[in-house]
Image 1 (cartoon, rainbow, N blue to C red):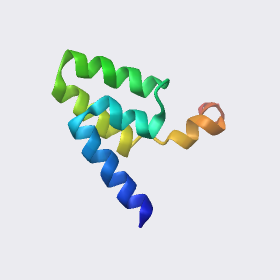
Image 2 (cartoon, rainbow, N blue to C red):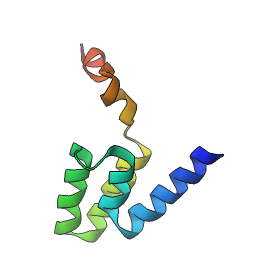
Image 3 (tube, rainbow, N blue to C red):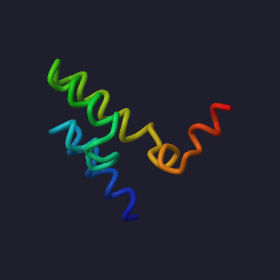
Image 4 (spheres, one colour):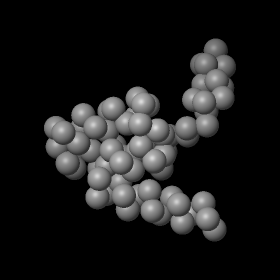
Length: 73
């Protein structure tokens, strides 16, 4: 229950301030954050779309555990 509530809050924040929502999910020094920041500067709607994609579809644990590179091989 707490996980779905946190996800809901992240989605609401991503709609209002896209880079902040991505920052909560992936951290402020991640590639996802910088992509979202640039897209939001270029246009608010592309920033929202990418923020929702980064929050709902990108699995942050895969990158942190190093499994990403093992999956590529």
